[in-house]
Amino acid sequence: MSLLMSLSSGAMAVMPALSGPTVSAPVVETKPLIHEVRSEDYEPITDPKNVEKFLKDYFSDIPLLARIGACESHNRQYNSKGGVLRGEKNSYDRGVMQINLLYHEETADKMGLDLTKIDDNVAFARYLYEKYGAKPWMSSSPCWSKFASPDLAKK
Image 1 (cartoon, helix red, strand yellow):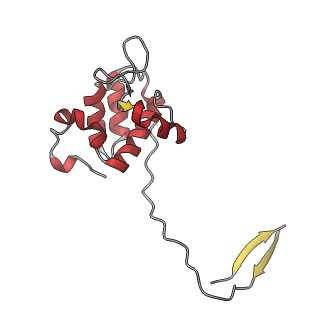
Image 2 (cartoon, one colour):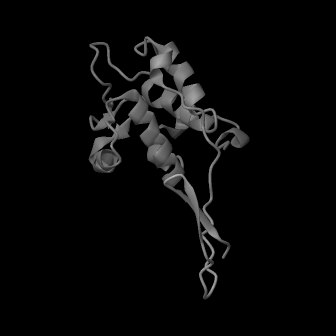
Image 3 (cartoon, rainbow, N blue to C red):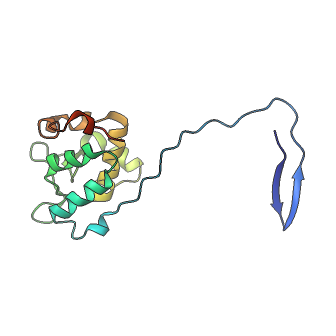
């Protein structure tokens, strides 16, 4: 192990190398940084055209998720009365990505995400996709599976 150097009170201190077996740091796999895309840059977010642009930019690395959002909610986070969109077939589904509260609300809460907010809804959708692929949205697959296979999971 090489010398460990640290700054302390403006003076440089040098510690001798530790004797014994060398321990290497674990290799950590890093993902490329994703440009942070926020819904506030797409106002008014009540306009489905703005939501569509937001989803395409947010999921530029996973275009399938943008298509899923279009199929699941028709690019809407809110209903006509201004409330968070609920699922037509399953009232536990919420928001643009129709995240099911019954199955996912506890995990989202532990992650500090509020699924009624569009930025958190799409962040949780990304988490679900990275963990399960498109399986959570299989009920809408007749709509989004029309993509050519190379476009299904670009990363």
